[in-house]
Length: 402
Image 1: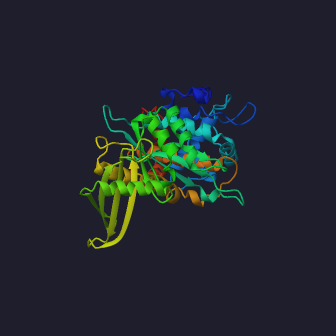
Image 2: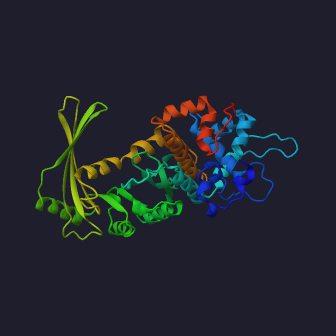
Image 3: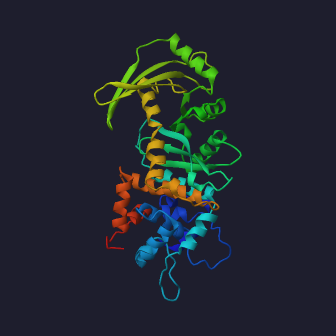
């Protein structure tokens, strides 16, 4: 892979083949630095950031510079470092260069390039009739709050089964998550996804007529939680369930020091004026100790445009439960493993760019089969060539140390 490959293609020219190699995709992001004669190609600097964040203990600008300074010349060349035309020597980017690039790079262009790569990297089961389950949820980068300036809030779409972020957008300060769903849907299309092959799970904030009409109109499935912010709809759901009483299906689970029992009731959404509504449901959750004694109860109502042939009671319960994968396997990992909320990076676009970097590192590790991200990052620290092999489609065929 050469530096020219990394820097010669514009963002709107990301092809399926090119996006399959993350380093090449990163090189398509427009370079915000003015003038020519740049010592370090943009894709190289971003690649250093990604690989350093994949390694435990290096998830900061200072850490990224330290990681690069300790890397071998051959390893840096594999990341796209531009050799000196006279000596052939390569140099690691400084902390100042890494910070300047992350602060100035366009986060939307960066996210678009990453989404294009993720779309091609995500494995597809040939002939699988099931839709891909995608959770839509937001997260605030709390450590980036600066005085009266609110912390950036990011809305993401992430898969349930193998929790990876497919697309992410920063919510503008003068709006909220609700109108950004349409933008996120457009980002998914641009990356190569077909919304009609997906079912989206959303919390009560997004249980809106406009959002349901948008998703249903694209052929996508939706599963939405219904709460008191939509009192008329909640009443209609409860009445529909009462009008069609049936025995509740049951799911149980045991682990993490507790037991959980879920009772699922489903009814047709007959007469409910909500776009595409086909079924309504109620999930009653009982949790308790390993002795089976119940200690708490929670009731959740919902609505979906999936009919009984495409989502029975058990499948609906699985979709509702799977929605929390974005909290447990993505947002929690960014907070606890990468210490996102402890980061005090606040300048320019850097908070949103670093959040995307954390997503990329997690995606790389998950697609490689990692179940425990913290353990996988420690392994990458011990063997830096691991991260390089994850980052590029082109493998080091001779298997010699980098």
